[in-house]
Image (cartoon, rainbow, N blue to C red; front, side, top):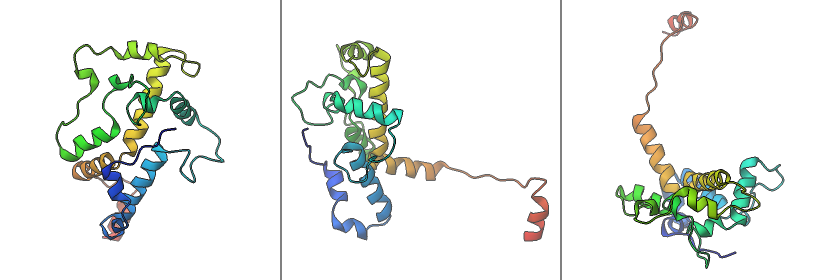
Length: 181
């Protein structure tokens, strides 16, 4: 299997100085989750010893059929025939980090085949229908996007910015609230 060096933003997170930064533990966990998603077979402590789930079986089959290479996530001689599904999680993370649309999906370009047409060409013994291929690629990309550290950071920041907690005292809680006051 072709190994791809981690991108610059991941390499920076592997520097020992990460321990001196605020939220070091969170950054380290995000980086470890990224490695687990990108290199599950090479990552110590991955799902070994656990019963496989439907999701993990789909992920394994997607890797077996080189969806990562066909999506352009790893260097390969395989044609990048699944790029109609959008930009890579790394490119998406760059767009979010820069707050600018630097990378655009293949589907935005002229003469791009439809997702259904592309899925039809990728049916195989693991994914026998167009819908199964589409579901597998969607799940695969969703897992990788969810593990991209810059996307996680953005989602956390937006959540903290926009979250609100509202409470009211219920009838049952009124005596406790009075006693506490």
